[in-house]
Length: 368
Ligand SMILES: [Zn+2]
Figure: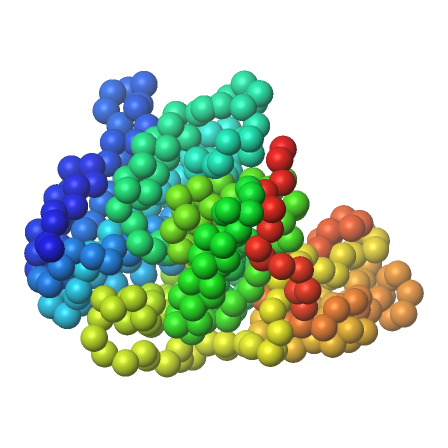
Protein backbone atom coordinates (compact mmCIF):
# COMPACT_ATOMS: atom_id res chain seq x y z
CA UNK A 1 0.00 0.00 0.00
CA UNK A 2 1.31 3.39 -0.95
CA UNK A 3 -0.60 5.87 1.20
CA UNK A 4 0.07 9.56 1.00
CA UNK A 5 1.37 11.14 4.20
CA UNK A 6 0.22 14.61 5.24
CA UNK A 7 2.35 16.60 7.66
CA UNK A 8 1.42 20.28 7.77
CA UNK A 9 1.20 21.45 4.15
CA UNK A 10 3.51 18.68 2.85
CA UNK A 11 1.75 15.82 1.03
CA UNK A 12 3.88 12.87 0.01
CA UNK A 13 3.79 11.28 -3.45
CA UNK A 14 5.44 7.97 -4.43
CA UNK A 15 8.92 8.46 -5.91
CA UNK A 16 9.16 12.18 -5.10
CA UNK A 17 10.25 14.62 -2.42
CA UNK A 18 7.46 16.82 -1.06
CA UNK A 19 8.09 20.09 0.76
CA UNK A 20 5.84 22.04 3.06
CA UNK A 21 5.54 23.78 6.41
CA UNK A 22 3.91 23.11 9.76
CA UNK A 23 2.45 26.14 11.54
CA UNK A 24 4.13 26.22 14.93
CA UNK A 25 4.23 29.33 17.13
CA UNK A 26 1.85 32.24 16.37
CA UNK A 27 3.76 35.54 16.24
CA UNK A 28 2.47 38.85 17.70
CA UNK A 29 3.63 40.50 14.47
CA UNK A 30 1.40 38.22 12.42
CA UNK A 31 1.93 34.82 10.85
CA UNK A 32 3.72 31.90 12.45
CA UNK A 33 7.11 30.47 13.10
CA UNK A 34 6.93 27.32 10.98
CA UNK A 35 8.74 23.99 10.97
CA UNK A 36 10.00 23.09 7.48
CA UNK A 37 8.76 19.62 6.47
CA UNK A 38 10.38 17.34 3.88
CA UNK A 39 8.75 14.01 2.95
CA UNK A 40 10.64 11.63 0.68
CA UNK A 41 8.53 8.66 -0.35
CA UNK A 42 9.73 5.52 -2.16
CA UNK A 43 7.98 4.12 -5.19
CA UNK A 44 7.28 0.84 -3.40
CA UNK A 45 5.11 1.23 -0.33
CA UNK A 46 4.85 4.08 2.16
CA UNK A 47 5.95 2.03 5.21
CA UNK A 48 8.07 1.96 7.22
CA UNK A 49 8.24 5.63 8.15
CA UNK A 50 11.44 7.10 9.60
CA UNK A 51 11.40 10.60 11.09
CA UNK A 52 14.69 12.51 11.27
CA UNK A 53 14.66 15.83 13.13
CA UNK A 54 17.34 18.41 13.85
CA UNK A 55 18.25 21.80 15.30
CA UNK A 56 15.84 21.85 18.25
CA UNK A 57 18.80 23.60 19.88
CA UNK A 58 19.21 26.62 17.60
CA UNK A 59 23.01 26.70 17.72
CA UNK A 60 23.37 23.03 16.71
CA UNK A 61 23.69 22.89 12.94
CA UNK A 62 24.92 19.39 12.11
CA UNK A 63 21.42 17.87 12.13
CA UNK A 64 20.24 20.31 9.49
CA UNK A 65 23.34 19.63 7.37
CA UNK A 66 22.71 15.88 7.68
CA UNK A 67 19.08 16.27 6.55
CA UNK A 68 20.04 18.57 3.66
CA UNK A 69 22.58 16.00 2.43
CA UNK A 70 20.59 12.84 3.19
CA UNK A 71 17.67 13.51 0.87
CA UNK A 72 18.90 13.16 -2.73
CA UNK A 73 17.21 11.95 -5.96
CA UNK A 74 19.37 8.80 -5.73
CA UNK A 75 18.10 8.04 -2.22
CA UNK A 76 14.47 8.46 -3.29
CA UNK A 77 15.11 6.18 -6.30
CA UNK A 78 16.25 3.34 -4.00
CA UNK A 79 13.86 4.05 -1.12
CA UNK A 80 11.17 1.75 0.24
CA UNK A 81 8.88 3.51 2.71
CA UNK A 82 8.91 7.14 3.74
CA UNK A 83 11.42 9.53 5.26
CA UNK A 84 9.98 12.55 7.09
CA UNK A 85 12.62 15.17 7.91
CA UNK A 86 12.45 18.45 9.81
CA UNK A 87 15.66 20.49 9.37
CA UNK A 88 14.81 22.76 12.32
CA UNK A 89 12.47 22.27 15.28
CA UNK A 90 13.50 25.72 16.52
CA UNK A 91 13.41 28.33 13.73
CA UNK A 92 13.67 31.27 16.18
CA UNK A 93 16.76 29.77 17.82
CA UNK A 94 18.28 29.11 14.41
CA UNK A 95 17.82 32.76 13.39
CA UNK A 96 19.55 34.02 16.55
CA UNK A 97 22.02 31.08 16.84
CA UNK A 98 20.81 30.45 20.38
CA UNK A 99 19.98 27.15 22.09
CA UNK A 100 16.48 28.35 23.08
CA UNK A 101 14.06 30.53 21.11
CA UNK A 102 13.88 34.06 22.55
CA UNK A 103 10.20 33.54 23.42
CA UNK A 104 10.97 30.60 25.69
CA UNK A 105 12.90 32.73 28.21
CA UNK A 106 15.89 30.48 28.71
CA UNK A 107 14.01 27.18 28.98
CA UNK A 108 15.26 24.15 27.06
CA UNK A 109 13.04 23.44 24.03
CA UNK A 110 14.13 19.80 24.10
CA UNK A 111 12.23 19.26 27.37
CA UNK A 112 8.77 20.26 26.10
CA UNK A 113 7.41 17.21 24.25
CA UNK A 114 4.34 15.38 25.61
CA UNK A 115 4.92 12.94 28.46
CA UNK A 116 2.93 10.22 30.19
CA UNK A 117 0.40 11.49 32.76
CA UNK A 118 1.92 12.25 36.15
CA UNK A 119 5.38 13.10 34.85
CA UNK A 120 4.82 16.74 33.82
CA UNK A 121 5.05 19.63 36.27
CA UNK A 122 1.74 21.30 35.38
CA UNK A 123 1.96 23.65 38.39
CA UNK A 124 4.56 25.63 36.42
CA UNK A 125 2.68 28.85 35.53
CA UNK A 126 4.25 28.92 32.04
CA UNK A 127 2.75 25.50 31.18
CA UNK A 128 1.86 25.07 28.38
CA UNK A 129 3.97 27.57 26.46
CA UNK A 130 3.18 28.35 22.80
CA UNK A 131 6.09 26.21 21.67
CA UNK A 132 4.97 23.35 23.93
CA UNK A 133 1.53 23.50 22.31
CA UNK A 134 3.10 23.45 18.83
CA UNK A 135 5.28 20.46 19.75
CA UNK A 136 2.18 18.67 21.13
CA UNK A 137 0.40 19.14 17.77
CA UNK A 138 3.46 17.94 15.86
CA UNK A 139 3.82 15.01 18.24
CA UNK A 140 0.31 13.83 17.33
CA UNK A 141 1.57 13.46 13.74
CA UNK A 142 4.75 11.68 14.92
CA UNK A 143 2.78 9.27 17.09
CA UNK A 144 0.31 8.56 14.26
CA UNK A 145 2.89 7.94 11.53
CA UNK A 146 6.43 7.16 12.77
CA UNK A 147 7.90 3.67 12.95
CA UNK A 148 11.33 5.04 13.97
CA UNK A 149 12.73 8.43 14.97
CA UNK A 150 16.23 9.90 15.11
CA UNK A 151 16.83 13.37 16.60
CA UNK A 152 20.13 15.07 15.75
CA UNK A 153 22.18 17.27 18.12
CA UNK A 154 25.67 18.64 18.75
CA UNK A 155 27.47 17.66 21.95
CA UNK A 156 30.48 19.92 22.27
CA UNK A 157 33.41 21.65 20.64
CA UNK A 158 35.78 18.76 21.07
CA UNK A 159 33.91 15.45 21.12
CA UNK A 160 33.31 12.14 19.36
CA UNK A 161 29.97 11.47 17.63
CA UNK A 162 27.73 9.03 19.49
CA UNK A 163 24.13 7.90 20.03
CA UNK A 164 22.30 8.19 23.34
CA UNK A 165 20.23 5.20 24.41
CA UNK A 166 17.28 6.25 26.60
CA UNK A 167 15.66 4.22 29.37
CA UNK A 168 12.29 2.61 28.61
CA UNK A 169 9.69 2.92 31.38
CA UNK A 170 6.74 0.70 32.24
CA UNK A 171 3.82 1.44 34.58
CA UNK A 172 2.74 -2.12 35.42
CA UNK A 173 3.57 -5.74 34.68
CA UNK A 174 1.40 -5.78 31.58
CA UNK A 175 3.51 -2.96 30.11
CA UNK A 176 6.80 -4.55 31.11
CA UNK A 177 6.80 -7.04 28.24
CA UNK A 178 6.02 -4.29 25.72
CA UNK A 179 8.73 -2.09 27.22
CA UNK A 180 11.31 -4.90 27.02
CA UNK A 181 10.53 -5.50 23.33
CA UNK A 182 10.86 -1.78 22.63
CA UNK A 183 14.14 -1.61 24.57
CA UNK A 184 15.52 -4.54 22.52
CA UNK A 185 14.34 -2.95 19.28
CA UNK A 186 16.18 0.30 20.12
CA UNK A 187 19.29 -1.76 20.87
CA UNK A 188 19.09 -3.45 17.46
CA UNK A 189 18.53 -0.08 15.74
CA UNK A 190 21.58 1.46 17.42
CA UNK A 191 23.72 -1.56 16.66
CA UNK A 192 22.73 -1.24 13.00
CA UNK A 193 23.56 2.48 13.07
CA UNK A 194 27.17 1.68 13.94
CA UNK A 195 28.09 4.75 16.03
CA UNK A 196 29.35 4.62 19.63
CA UNK A 197 26.38 3.98 21.98
CA UNK A 198 26.12 5.71 25.37
CA UNK A 199 23.28 5.21 27.87
CA UNK A 200 21.44 8.25 29.21
CA UNK A 201 21.45 9.21 32.90
CA UNK A 202 19.98 6.64 35.31
CA UNK A 203 16.22 6.68 35.50
CA UNK A 204 15.37 8.96 38.46
CA UNK A 205 17.77 11.63 37.22
CA UNK A 206 16.41 11.17 33.69
CA UNK A 207 12.87 12.12 34.74
CA UNK A 208 14.06 14.93 37.05
CA UNK A 209 15.98 16.42 34.12
CA UNK A 210 12.79 16.05 32.01
CA UNK A 211 14.71 14.03 29.42
CA UNK A 212 11.55 11.93 28.91
CA UNK A 213 10.19 15.12 27.29
CA UNK A 214 13.03 15.37 24.76
CA UNK A 215 12.11 14.59 21.15
CA UNK A 216 13.50 11.06 21.28
CA UNK A 217 12.53 10.51 24.94
CA UNK A 218 8.89 11.34 24.19
CA UNK A 219 8.81 9.30 20.98
CA UNK A 220 10.18 6.33 22.93
CA UNK A 221 8.27 6.58 26.19
CA UNK A 222 5.07 8.46 25.31
CA UNK A 223 4.44 7.08 21.81
CA UNK A 224 6.42 3.79 22.21
CA UNK A 225 8.35 4.35 18.96
CA UNK A 226 11.99 3.14 18.70
CA UNK A 227 13.93 6.42 18.92
CA UNK A 228 17.38 7.79 19.68
CA UNK A 229 19.31 11.04 20.01
CA UNK A 230 22.52 11.34 18.00
CA UNK A 231 25.15 13.78 19.30
CA UNK A 232 27.67 15.17 16.82
CA UNK A 233 30.58 17.61 17.23
CA UNK A 234 30.83 21.25 18.22
CA UNK A 235 28.06 23.84 18.10
CA UNK A 236 27.79 26.90 15.84
CA UNK A 237 29.66 25.19 13.02
CA UNK A 238 29.19 22.20 10.69
CA UNK A 239 31.49 19.30 11.63
CA UNK A 240 31.94 17.64 8.25
CA UNK A 241 33.39 14.30 9.43
CA UNK A 242 30.65 13.94 12.03
CA UNK A 243 27.98 14.78 9.45
CA UNK A 244 29.41 12.06 7.16
CA UNK A 245 29.35 9.57 10.05
CA UNK A 246 25.73 10.44 10.89
CA UNK A 247 24.70 10.10 7.23
CA UNK A 248 26.25 6.61 7.11
CA UNK A 249 24.59 5.77 10.46
CA UNK A 250 21.12 6.89 9.35
CA UNK A 251 21.43 5.03 6.02
CA UNK A 252 22.47 1.95 8.04
CA UNK A 253 19.31 2.27 10.15
CA UNK A 254 17.28 2.56 6.92
CA UNK A 255 18.93 -0.65 5.59
CA UNK A 256 18.18 -2.42 8.87
CA UNK A 257 14.55 -1.23 8.65
CA UNK A 258 14.23 -2.50 5.06
CA UNK A 259 14.11 1.01 3.56
CA UNK A 260 17.32 0.72 1.50
CA UNK A 261 18.47 -2.42 -0.33
CA UNK A 262 22.29 -2.31 -0.08
CA UNK A 263 24.54 -3.77 2.67
CA UNK A 264 25.63 -1.62 5.67
CA UNK A 265 28.40 0.93 5.13
CA UNK A 266 31.30 1.39 7.57
CA UNK A 267 31.54 4.45 9.84
CA UNK A 268 34.73 6.19 8.66
CA UNK A 269 37.08 8.86 10.02
CA UNK A 270 35.60 9.06 13.53
CA UNK A 271 36.28 6.84 16.57
CA UNK A 272 33.72 4.12 17.32
CA UNK A 273 34.19 2.78 20.86
CA UNK A 274 32.86 -0.42 22.35
CA UNK A 275 34.41 -1.50 25.66
CA UNK A 276 32.44 -4.76 25.71
CA UNK A 277 30.14 -3.47 28.48
CA UNK A 278 27.41 -0.77 28.52
CA UNK A 279 28.47 2.79 29.35
CA UNK A 280 26.54 5.86 30.44
CA UNK A 281 27.29 9.55 30.35
CA UNK A 282 28.81 11.35 33.30
CA UNK A 283 30.24 14.83 33.82
CA UNK A 284 33.53 14.03 35.51
CA UNK A 285 35.96 14.92 37.03
CA UNK A 286 35.20 18.24 38.72
CA UNK A 287 37.74 20.88 39.73
CA UNK A 288 38.43 21.20 43.46
CA UNK A 289 39.40 24.90 43.32
CA UNK A 290 38.80 27.99 41.24
CA UNK A 291 41.46 27.52 38.58
CA UNK A 292 42.61 27.40 34.98
CA UNK A 293 42.24 23.92 33.43
CA UNK A 294 44.39 22.19 30.82
CA UNK A 295 43.02 18.90 29.47
CA UNK A 296 45.49 16.02 29.24
CA UNK A 297 43.30 13.68 27.17
CA UNK A 298 41.53 13.83 23.82
CA UNK A 299 37.97 12.85 22.78
CA UNK A 300 37.78 9.09 22.24
CA UNK A 301 40.73 8.33 24.60
CA UNK A 302 40.35 5.27 26.86
CA UNK A 303 40.81 6.17 30.53
CA UNK A 304 41.34 4.00 33.58
CA UNK A 305 40.49 4.81 37.20
CA UNK A 306 43.33 6.92 38.62
CA UNK A 307 44.56 8.27 35.28
CA UNK A 308 45.29 12.03 35.25
CA UNK A 309 42.93 13.67 32.73
CA UNK A 310 43.44 17.39 33.38
CA UNK A 311 45.72 19.78 35.26
CA UNK A 312 44.56 22.68 37.45
CA UNK A 313 46.83 25.74 37.62
CA UNK A 314 46.45 29.26 38.99
CA UNK A 315 46.49 32.40 36.85
CA UNK A 316 50.30 32.41 37.05
CA UNK A 317 50.46 28.84 35.68
CA UNK A 318 51.43 27.24 39.01
CA UNK A 319 49.72 23.89 39.85
CA UNK A 320 46.98 24.17 42.50
CA UNK A 321 45.06 21.67 44.63
CA UNK A 322 47.98 19.38 45.51
CA UNK A 323 49.39 16.41 43.58
CA UNK A 324 50.89 18.75 40.93
CA UNK A 325 47.34 19.99 40.20
CA UNK A 326 46.46 16.72 38.49
CA UNK A 327 42.76 15.88 38.26
CA UNK A 328 42.21 12.12 38.02
CA UNK A 329 39.24 10.07 36.90
CA UNK A 330 37.51 7.83 39.45
CA UNK A 331 36.14 5.63 36.65
CA UNK A 332 37.17 3.40 33.77
CA UNK A 333 35.73 4.43 30.44
CA UNK A 334 36.43 6.82 27.58
CA UNK A 335 36.29 10.53 26.84
CA UNK A 336 33.11 11.69 25.07
CA UNK A 337 34.08 15.34 24.89
CA UNK A 338 36.08 18.09 26.56
CA UNK A 339 34.11 21.01 28.01
CA UNK A 340 35.10 24.39 26.57
CA UNK A 341 36.67 27.33 28.40
CA UNK A 342 39.71 27.41 30.64
CA UNK A 343 38.54 29.34 33.72
CA UNK A 344 36.56 27.24 36.20
CA UNK A 345 34.83 27.74 39.54
CA UNK A 346 34.98 25.05 42.26
CA UNK A 347 33.04 21.84 41.50
CA UNK A 348 32.60 22.50 37.78
CA UNK A 349 33.09 19.44 35.56
CA UNK A 350 35.76 19.63 32.88
CA UNK A 351 34.69 16.83 30.52
CA UNK A 352 32.04 14.30 29.61
CA UNK A 353 33.04 10.69 30.14
CA UNK A 354 31.37 7.40 29.24
CA UNK A 355 31.68 5.08 32.27
CA UNK A 356 30.55 1.54 33.02
CA UNK A 357 26.77 1.34 33.48
CA UNK A 358 25.50 -1.46 35.71
CA UNK A 359 21.95 -0.06 35.95
CA UNK A 360 19.07 -1.34 33.81
CA UNK A 361 17.52 0.80 31.08
CA UNK A 362 14.21 -0.99 31.66
CA UNK A 363 12.61 0.79 34.62
CA UNK A 364 9.30 1.24 36.47
CA UNK A 365 8.04 4.78 35.82
CA UNK A 366 8.96 7.13 38.69
CA UNK A 367 6.36 9.82 39.50
CA UNK A 368 7.16 13.49 39.94
ZN1 LIG B 1 21.18 19.61 21.52
